[in-house]
Image (tube, rainbow, N blue to C red; front, side):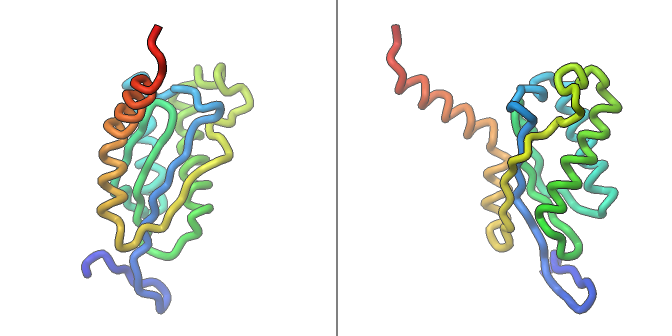
Length: 148
């Protein structure tokens, strides 16, 4: 297997599916320029730690990513670092975000993390098709609601 890494007498592959959302689930990534800047900020943060982003889906009000690390890392630390470093970069690129988040807290405290291992392709497909999944849920919701 070509995706195995060696680190201090450990051999393995460490891949995680992570999800998090902005504080109050505001739709801050609906503007293409902010979304593109955030994708770049997240890639910068991952590259600083030599982590590889396998898939990335930045939706208007949340973020999904599949990430591979070259050594065992605590998923909480990965989320802590990605959320913290990316928000630092975003507040520097877009100072007007401080109007929406005056205390400097871009991200909510909650998140989702799953170590994927052998299911990496399924996780990557899920992340790739985020727009379709959310569109389908919206259509199902609208079909189930009574129309006036």
